[in-house]
Length: 303
Image 1 (cartoon, one colour):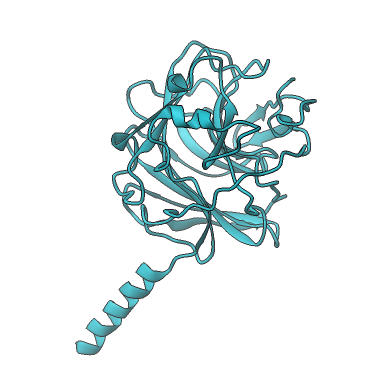
Image 2 (cartoon, rainbow, N blue to C red; image 1 turned 135 degrees about the vertical axis):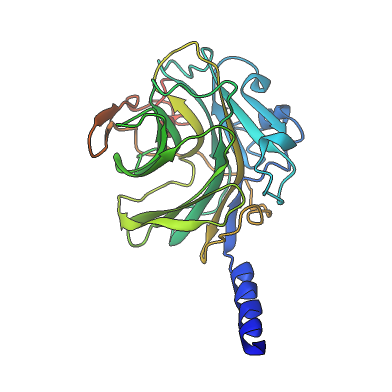
C-alpha cells in the first residue's frame, strides 16, 4: 500500500510538472483597459497583440476586459477578453465582419512542435448566429481553424484541417472550451487537444498531415463572420499562449510569462480560397483576394 501511495504521489507530481516552454504569451494582464490595445501601431509595435483588424468604431466597442470574461480555472491572468462582432465590423473595404488580434512577437511561432493554446466561450446573451459561417482562431492559409455555423450540425463548434471537419461538439452556452492546436511544423502535421471547464486537456484527434506554415504574424485570435449582418455577437477568450513541448495539459497555469518584442513588417503570401467539407455537407469558405498593402498582406484586405 505504501508503494502504491508513493507511486500515486510521484505520478501526480510528474503530471503537474509536465509543462513546455512558453514561446509567446497572449496573457491579457498587461492590458488594464481595452484602450491599452490602441497603444500598438505599425510605428509603435508594443504589447502582446497587433490590433488593427476591426471595424470603424472605438476599440471599446469591440474589446472588453473583466475577470468574469475568463475561464474561472485560469489562475494565470486577471481578466478575460470579450470580443464583439456586429454590423460595424467591416474592415478595410471587405464585405464580411471581423474582430481579430494577431501575435506581436519576434519569436518564431512556426518551427518544431508547438502548441497553440486558447479557451473560448459564448453566452446566452448576444450568442453567435449559426446561420452564418464563422472562422475562429485561424491561420491565414486555413490549414487549421475552428468554425461555427457550418456543416450538418451548424450549432456545433467544429475543428477543421485543410477545410475538412475532424472534430466537433455542441457549442453550449456558458461552457468554456479549452483547445491546443498540436502543430508539428517540421513533420507537417496537426492534431487537437481539448477539454471543457477546468478539466485537463486530452488529445482528441491524432496528428494528421497538413500544409503547416506561419510567418508568426498570421494566426488570428478572434472571429471572422462571412456576412454583413446586424446581429451582435459576443465571444470570450482566455488562456492564450504558444508553447514548445511537452504540452501543458492543466488549464490556467500556462503562458504566464511574456516574450513580446517588436517585429518587422513583411508581406506574407496573399489569401487564398479554401473549401470546407464535412462527411455529409460541403460548405465553401470565402476569403478576400490578395492585398496590395504591405501591412495588411496577411489579412486579405484592400488598401
